[in-house]
Length: 113
Image (cartoon, rainbow, N blue to C red; front, side, top):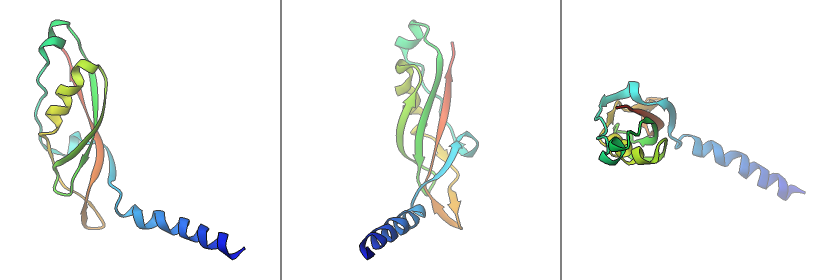
């Protein structure tokens, strides 16, 4: 029976070592933005009078730059414009225990005509 105990111990200690590498989960990133660019309304969406809220999930690197755009939700015709816009945003760096860390969160764009 000593083997299951060793396995359980290894499984319990592994997540703790990964925790410091995990990005900080911030929620809405708008308040931390130092530079914002507005999305360009797609002409096809404009001509079909499409409006709506697009939420874009992203990762911000240790320097405050957009490292990765993960998911977008909302009207499909508007998602690419929102993703393109948020890639140009810049944020204040985030810190954990005095060290710069990656952060994950989202930005919402309200497309209205």
